[in-house]
Image (cartoon, rainbow, N blue to C red; front, side):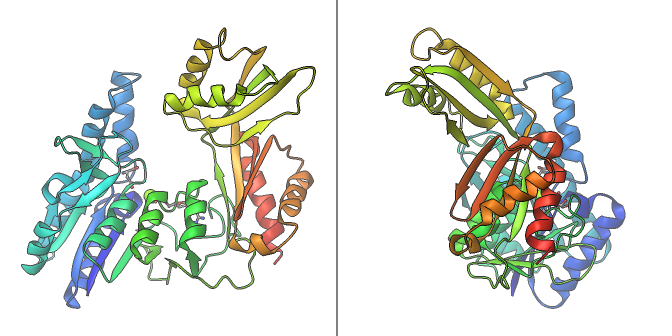
Length: 403
Ligand code: ADP
Ligand code: ASP
Ligand code: MG
């Protein structure tokens, strides 16, 4: 059997944890399996490296930032192989360049395009444990890239797909996927199973337990993903195509603190206004999420929308550039202190009243809703960021605790 085992930062945070992981991998190896291990940077290393960059420059070139942060994963894999050698098992560390893991050139957010499996196969055939850097890649000009924060999960699932692994296990600091972040909602329940679609929504809407692109990749290549703890042997959560959800309408609640809201007030109420506004933003690669347009009044209307907070300044600059030509309006207003709270569940499609129940939970907690957006399997609301945790608990209580 070929297994891919990925361990996150907290699972390799210090010497004791590194030896713990080494022993778990060796157990699999001694059972006769081929073992491929994917590691993240130790503890808070990636954050510390980013802080170093920001100390030198407020806006470091993205290529150089990737060159810097990729170092973190290399520390983990080399130390892990030293620990394995100390325990008497042959292991070899490989970085993205040595594998090679090819990506696009979108620094800090590169996409994997293909993985060469020859070197890995050769090392496995020589009965070594192969320990590979997560998160990093290499573009077609041999530049180092990274897959975005949390991207080691995607490295692991992509490797499992490329190697046609029998198992892909993501080890972290919680027992599996819960109905909400257990650090924020203490009564959150662990799910035995969840579908790719629901997990993808949850991950995209802020549940940081899995990188959303790892779930996308799992679905595309049919890789079953198991999320479990590196600190115990509990069963974990299986992410797969069809899951039994035991009469639960909602599979989870998530919160994302990244959005910011921009309101454009007093636009002309005539055809083409929305097109021009969003076209300017699209031309600058700025993604827009929730959009709300008011009813026209006295020949004018307002349009509000959300963008990621790190794109706000760019969005404002783009809009300011067109203020006197194609974007005539009275005022542009920004609110950076907002959060998006969402409920996700495939059961919503066939159950009426989910939105009302969510809004009732927020009303009971005295939390005001600023924007709403829905799809077949999710409802999201924008609220003041300070109420984020409280909102998650209130919504979770209403849907899951009382079930
Ligand atoms: P790793 O370093 O192992 O990749 P992460 O910090 O990226 O770990 O992901 C694990 C964390 O995800 C947990 O500690 C937990 O706080 C958070 N989390 C957010 N939403 C969920 C959820 N629905 N279920 C489980 N954990 C969640
Ligand atoms: N070390 C990287 C990060 O902190 C990648 C990962 O942990 O998956 O984002
Ligand atoms: Mg992670």
